[in-house]
Image 1 (cartoon, rainbow, N blue to C red):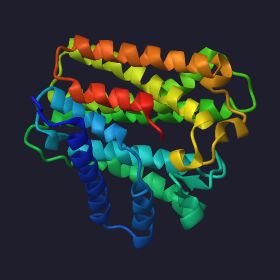
Image 2 (image 1 turned 60 degrees about the horizontal axis):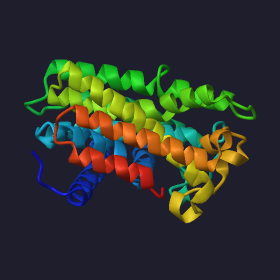
Image 3 (image 1 turned 60 degrees about the vertical axis):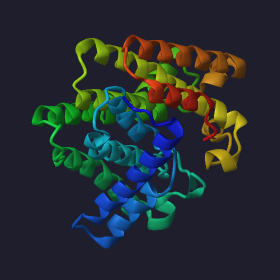
Length: 297
């Protein structure tokens, strides 16, 4: 059972993941400009919530966190690939990501597309090549299956195309929720379930953690929508109001800003309740949940 504070956990393991993803890229036998473009977006910063979730679940089960490092890095690579592609002119056409020029602004559209492709495919290679003695072949297979579903047509990619199709339309709350469950929520859920798979969670624990991550994913996106109104460009690393400028439906536009904040609080509360059902040491997961509720970027 962990005795480290969340501050120590976040600082130490965020630094570890950030160094490992670059180390993994540097190991590739690939053209230097491709590796440079991959590393550029991996170095762009962020809270690394997804890899921290993988490791925090392992901590809840009192497992060796090193067993989850390749998977945590892989999920961060998938998330980063999605941002590289999301910023492209054919998608959201953004010039800034986390306060820096987007990948295609630095390397050109073709290289940015290929860097995203490389990050996505390399992620599964990393999982398959995991050599930790606690990680079995069955675990690797289950990880690849769960993460592929979350990242693909049934998950993030499906949510992205629904998001694009929803531009310049007035969406219902159910349609908006579908987009966010898939575009954002599925990869967050996969991060939690990856930690559970690596920990040998039983069916009841898996179910509670899945419900926890469902509420966490929606809370994450509602907070994102709120920040698009209340944040500053310095905080969120991109122009404020970009969703409104792209004519996208958001939780504040459908529920009002106060209604979105109420919905955020509801999902945070339910996320905490699901964690309690696991009867594990979920202190770090509870703190990540609270961090998402109050995050500034």
